[in-house]
Every structure is written in structure tokens, then in C-alpha cells.
Length: 383
Ligand code: GCU
Image (cartoon, rainbow, N blue to C red):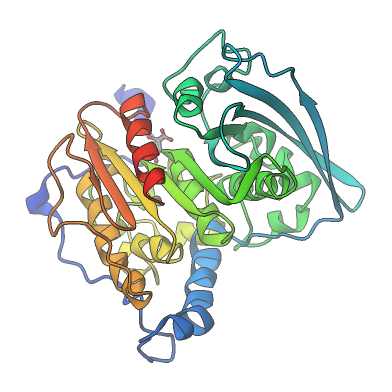
């Protein structure tokens, strides 16, 4: 083991609350020119674009949205899925730019009985494709389609590999080389997580054309690296009605400045293909970042956000996730929205489904389970 590590930087993680350094979060309400934002108009006009640009330039990279055309190839079954409870649509989304194209494959189940158009949960699938099996031969807790259909929601998914392989050597072979090669030459260029979020927006483009789907009620869901992506997608694309970020941890919903569990230096070293080149400047320099992750959540305001953790997943810093939601509250307050969260993190398996924020810390490991989904459904029903 030691031999394997030779030549590589050795990282140490802090899991001790007493060793969390003292830190001051950047003020989400203070503009670059030092003005304090006091209402939603000024937030949307002045500060929100500034914060979005800071995340583009320093963390996730740019989000190009121009393309020449988009085509949808739809295969719809006869409505006999799940014992007649659902219709399965498989959609091939092809996006063209400058003579090149990429294809995103979407699996979508729509409840037969529900009144149309229906709200939909869209999962950014960062795990095996079998998790979103359209044949339902495999039924994974990661995407419990039957449970969502029984609850009256449509459920959709696409796989991240359609946009960018999750691999540091090949990540550029998808949307980056094919549609936006110029991004690869910029220090604030989009990388894999940006490409995955871009894909979520193209699925949103499709939803806007599907009359069975209520495109104003699309909840974007992601787990872990997918949960970092769901936050970035919802921050960028205000058409998403709500965001679920499950165990998203570092550069997801957890505060970087706490330096608890995974740190920026570690994520940038193990996964150099996720974030922009510029983000590498903040290795071991969390306090130099002009943002922290509460500001990413704030970009989603006034839309609802549900964040989760798992008790054994200290790597993703459960407390730092709760504190990031709390630190985003001032932006929701501009819209006269209370988060509904208590002052301190709730206990294990004690979901808080507040006004616009939901949070729970599930007993167990880093994963997304039917326990998590059950709470997302409860949360979605509130809105
Ligand atoms: C690694 C990584 C995390 C990430 C996780 C996952 O543990 O360090 O940042 O969230 O993988 O995607 O499951």
C-alpha cells in the first residue's frame, strides 16, 4: 500500500469536529462593489449573475447553451408496463452544433392513471446503467420507478456517460470534443460535471415538448457526484422547479471551508476531470475561494432544495451540508421564504421537510435508497 502511494501526495482527512478551523463564509448578499442586497429584484439583477459567474469562473466552468438544433426520437410502448400502471417512453435526444452531434438516451415512465400533465423526477444517473433498467428486470433502490409511479409521479433518467465518460483520460470524448471543443482550451471551461448538467437541461428541453409532462414541475435529482451535478444544473437552469442533492458532499452541498472529510485538493487530484482548471488553484486554499457552497444553493432560490446525508458517510460532511442550507437562508428570506429548518442539524433518521428546504441524515452508508426517495416524494407533494 505504501509502495503504491509513493510519489503521490498523501492526504489526511479531518473527521474531528473540534479540529474544524475557524472560518468566515463569503457574504452571499454583498456585491463585488460592496453593496448589500436587500430585496429580490436587486438579488436577481445584480448579485445572482455575479455569483453564477464566480461559480463558472472558479469552480464548474462555463455552461454553453447554444446549439444549432435538437431532435427527439421517441419509442413509446403500449402502456402495459408495471401491470398497466405506466407507459414507458424511451427518447433519443440528438443535439447538433456545427455539423457534429451527441445523443442522450432518456428512460421515462409516466403513470397511466394520473391526471396529465404530471410532475416528474429526473435522475442524473452516475452509477451503472442497470439502475435505470427500462425492462424492470432489475429494480434498483437507486431509481425505484414503481414507487414513484404508485405515488403519481413520472420518473425519468439519463446516464452521465452519454455526455462525458466519468474518466480523467476520456471525459472529453463526448459533448466537449463533439460540440464545444473550445471549452477544452479555457481555464474556466466546462468539464465532466458541467457536461452532465448540460445534459439535464437538454432533457428539460424535451420535457417542454412532451404534453404528458408538466415541465414546470421537474425535480432534478442526483446522488453524490450526480448530486453535485443536480445542484449545478438547477443553479444554471431556472426551469428546474426543485433540486434534490443526495450525499453530494464536497463541491456539492457541503461547505468547503470546514475542511471536513473530502477536501478540494483531494477531489481535484482524484477527479481532475470534474471541475474547471481554475478550481485547482484552490487546492488547500479553501479560504481563497470567492464562493462557498451555500452560495450555490442560494442560486436555486426561491425554488425548493432537498439535501441528504448518510450517518456513516462523514466523507460528505453531513453537518457541513446542513450548515450550507442554513447559510443560504438569507437569499430565500429576500423572497419572504422561511427555510423551515431548525437551528441545529436534526438527529439521524429525523427528516425535516420544512418550507422550502428539506434535509435528512439517514442511518447508513453513502447511497440513495427508498428511504431517501420516500422523503423526496413527501417533499415534492408539499409543492
Ligand atoms: C468519491 C468522491 C466524492 C463523490 C463520490 C461519489 O467518494 O470523492 O466526491 O461524491 O465519489 O460520487 O460517489
